[in-house]
Structure formats: C-alpha cells, structure tokens
Image 1 (cartoon, rainbow, N blue to C red):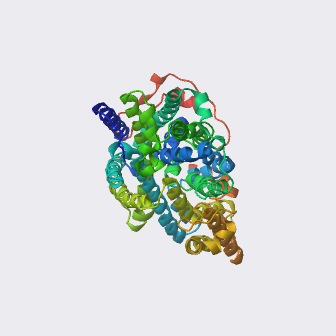
Image 2: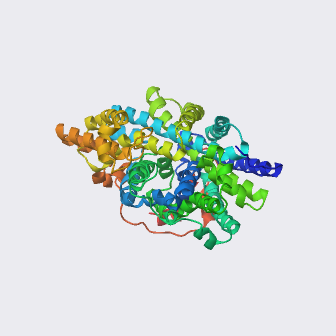
Image 3: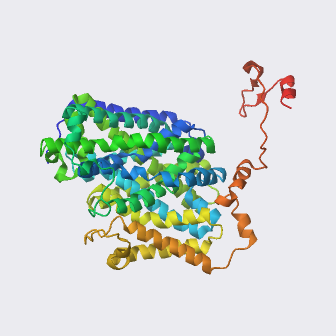
Length: 563
C-alpha cells in the first residue's frame, strides 16, 4: 500500500484543530451538575443550533466512507438514500416528537415501559444498546479507513487510538459539549465537503471535463432496480431508506436526545425541517462528491486513484482525492480535519446516547434512589465502557468487507423489531404488551431463521436480486424482517383479549390518538389556551436578591399590572 506523504505542518494543523474542538466542548460543558445537563443540556437550545448539530450527527465519518466509496463505484446514485426521508416526516413532526417531548421520555426503553410494561423495556434496552454500540463500531471503522492512507498503520491500531480520544472527551463533556461542538463541526463539515468539490473541479479542468468523464450510468440519480447485488435500488430502499432512515429518526437515542434538548416542541420541529429540507441535501453533496471526482479522475488517469487505496478498498477514497486536489498542505490538513470532525460528531453522540440508556434504563432501575452525583459518575464511566465495546464491534465489522455492506447488514438485522414496536405502539392503541414482547422475541427468531435459511424465507422477497452465497441478500432481507415483525405484532394483538378502559387511561399522551393529553402532562395542570397580554417595563425595575435561590423582586405597581 502506498502511503500519502505528509509534513509537520499537516500534523500541526490537524492536532491544533482536534484540541480546539475538545477544548471548546469541555468549556461549554464545565457547568454540568446533573444527568439532565449531561444528557439533555438543560433542554434550552434553539432550533438552528439543534438542526446543525443533528446534521453533524447524521452525516458523520461513516457517511464520508460509505457514500464516497459508492460514488466512486456507481456515481450519483450514491445519494439516493437521502431521498427517502420525506415520507415519514409528518409522523415524526406531528406524532413522535410531541409524544416524547411532552411526556418527558428520557429514552426509548422508558417509553416502552410506560406504553407497555417493564419486560418490553428490558428487551428494547438490549436492542438499543446493540444498535448504538454497532453505530460506534461503524464510526470507528470508517474513520480508521479514511485515515489509513495517510498513517499507513494497521486499521485496528487507528481504531483504538481514536476510540480513546472520543470516549474520554464524551465522558467529561456530555450533551452540552456535543451540541456546541457539533454546531461548529456541522459548519466545517459542509464547507469542507463543498470545498473539495470546487478544488476537484479545478484539478480536473472544469465542470465540463468532469461531466464528460463520467459514464451515463454514473450520471443517473438512482441505481438499477435489482442489480448488482451489492448496490441496487429496491434493496437500498428497504434497508437504508426505510429501516435505516426510519430507525435513525425514531429510535436512535442520539437523535432523540437532540429533540429533548430543544427549547420546545416547536423548536424541535423547526430543527428537523431545516435539517431534512436544507442541511441534508447540502450534506449529501458534501459527503458524496469526492467519490464522483475520484471516478472522473480515474477515467482520465487510470490507476491514479486505485494505486493509493489500501488493498484497493474504496472506503478511503475521500482521503485520496483530498490529497490530490488540495493545492497546499494546509488545505489538505483542513479537509482531513473535517473528517475528524465528522467522526467526533457521530461518535460522541452515540457514546453519550449509550450512556444515557445504560444509566436511565439499567443502572437507575436496579439501584435504590441513587444521587445525581452518583448517576453522573456512572454516566461518565459508562461512556468509556461502551467505547471499549464499540472497539470490539469495529474489529468485527472490519472482517465483513465494505463499510456500506457491513452497515446495511447490521441495520437489516437489529432495527426491524424496534421500529415495528414503535410504529404499532404509537399508531394502534390496541397493540398489546404481549404482542410487543413477542414482536421482539419471535421477530428475532424469524430474523435469525432468515439468516440461516435465506433461500427459503428471504428469497420470496428478493425482487429478483441475484443470490450471493457469501452475503445472501444483505439489503432486501430488511423487507423480510419488517414483514415478519409487523405480522407477529398484528396477529398476536388480534388474538389477545381487547384491553379494558383502564389500559387506555394509562397510555394517554403516548399514542397519536391521545397527543392532546401530552401538554397537560408536561405542564402538570390544564393548559391555558388563551394568549396572555404583554407588559413593557424597564429592566432596572427588577431586583434580583443575590442568594442561593436568586429570588426576583418586582415593584408593587408592576405587580398590579401583572394581575
């Protein structure tokens, strides 16, 4: 493997950037006094800050590796995953976000206990931790693949080093550190991604030369319907567009914590709309374009790209293109720093979310009224622990093959039961606890049967996709898994006794049909729908007593005006 040469300037810039990001995050998080601050940042952030933070979390280091590599192999169709977010937006904006915010749900497993019972909570906790730790492993592997062309180290060594940095950072900073640094990194992420596109076009000789050196197939926005087996439209739609995207928005604890850190439901909705309608389309170009540039450069000068890829693996194509098109060492260092920013954004969110699930859904229920300081210490320790487990997951994924396929296969197996229980739980008030338990248990059983006997169980759902013995229907198996889980949930519910009225009283505010009860629960009393009157007064009329309670005193005349 040929290593991309670097100078001392490169490492000075990269190191300075990393220390700046870590220091900024820890500065903002210096006042963390409770798990409310550590996990949700005090629930005080505006929509624009949350939206940019969500972008940096969703478009992370694995995105640079995944979509740039597929852009190199298949062209513009690498963006089709990001076209699949629109159809579930109404349910997310007007259903799921109000439910979890108004009902003050700290985690998805907590929602399941309140909607169903503790057994469902325990099953979902296991699933959620597997999901988040898998995401951590994918992120570590992705960054290792992107840095390997520069460092020339073994991939496992890189994974361990970056995991230590990320785990230590999050264990000290928490959600406040994440949100503030993610905002900075989100801006840098977009700028760097678009910068490399501009530099790449200049390197090639302009847009016309770039366009003319892409094949007709590379210019299509969608892949072929059912071929090739490793990248086709119908498989990617069900695995990445439906199971992946819906799972990311509805069950990913890192995203849920962004919603809960918002100032209000309105701010959470604004952040989501801005992220999907504005930030994500730009982010799609930012993470994919290096692959398009690489394909055009390779067509112009055969071997120029592939000779620099470790073992011919396209996962590191972003770094290779950056080294070619950057016209200075400083710019190259900045572009690589953007990838490091993407890594930190993804990893810190998933590590913090894993700690939230472990503390809220494992440690606290098993302990007898632990103090906030104890919970905070456990949160920090758990952040380090899940990072260690994530390293093992990264080693496992490294044996699978490409990051795109490893991530796809992981999503297809882990996500369907949880997504099914969430959707049936919020949309169908009759959906029972017994059905939810069996959706997890029997759903997992059918998923493993599909892995063991793909030609019998998955083949009817294959849509004509070619069977590959080593990786049989990695993507389209998501459709089989979803159908199996949904069928189990519906059949078991219809076969069980219809719940009594007390059941519907217990789930008020937790379903689409009882959302109106959420604000009352959130406030603790009946909501006053009437708009209040505004009174203007000088700030110096207010006196704040400098004591532990920070009491506010208002003049008698002003109190009369306020009623």
